[in-house]
Picture 1 (cartoon, rainbow, N blue to C red):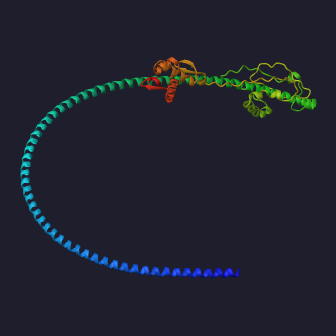
Picture 2 (spheres, helix red, strand yellow):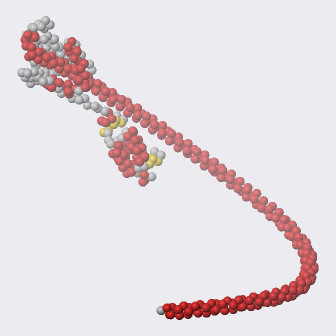
Picture 3 (tube, rainbow, N blue to C red):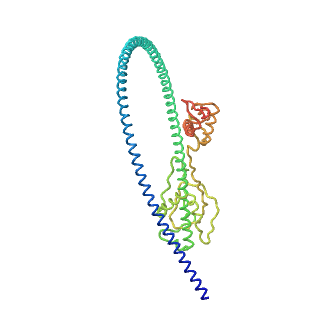
Length: 419
């Protein structure tokens, strides 16, 4: 193994030496070749400079010769050009003088012709102006006549419209005054009727108030007798009396008329003290006040009788003696509420005739159907055909015009599709 390794090392050294010798040989050869190439390039450069200088000198000489020849040619051309230019200018001056003379002659002739044509055109224009003035005067006269006739027609139409409008306004004002008077009479009649009813009901309430007070006194006496017995009856202010004389004396007064109600007699001290509260309760709720005697619980051992009540009287006079009378209960009298009557809800009056009040929608539908079926109608026709007053007709037509269903042409009302 050691021998093989020594042989390999020896072979390796030999190969390295051979490679180094080969590299030295290549280096020397390259240096020799590069030196030869430098010499060849220097010689070529020198030869090239010599050839270039010779060619440049030859070209410079040639250029100088060509420049001299071109200078001579340019001088000859300039001399020739100057001669030709002088000749051309002379010819052009002669031609321009001839041309100017010819142009002056043509302009003079054109000016003469232009003057003649302008004079002829002015004459024609004057004739046309005269004809136009005549036509304008005729048109002005016709227009003035037409304006006067139109003005007369407008004045007549406006006069007729003003007269018709005044008549309509007077009629409308008369209708308004008549309707206002009729309404005032109706309202006055309703007020009188309501006042009479109110007075009769007030009288009836005062009668029932007197009866209610008498019943209260009877109930108080009965209650006092049941609670305290006969010993309470012997008081200094109340002497003993019989049962017949102890009953309250009732005087019948003639029935009260709506015009004047007979006032009730002055009550006693206890009744006058309790009157304001009782009257206020009766005014606030008549039906409730009518049920007060029945709503009070009866005394123990007391059986109210079901005897009918006599006709109501205007006033009741009750003795203030504390004697215990026989209790006679009175059945409550129901009070009917006063009906409220309005003139507008009952009838609509026009020219002394009464028509039942109708809904606004039905009036608008009926008016639209009538206008559409009649192919246009006036206000008076609509009123007479549908039985409406002036207020209803005007309000209905105004509503339909705002809705765009009908249109107004002068004094005629037309449907929208007929306009």
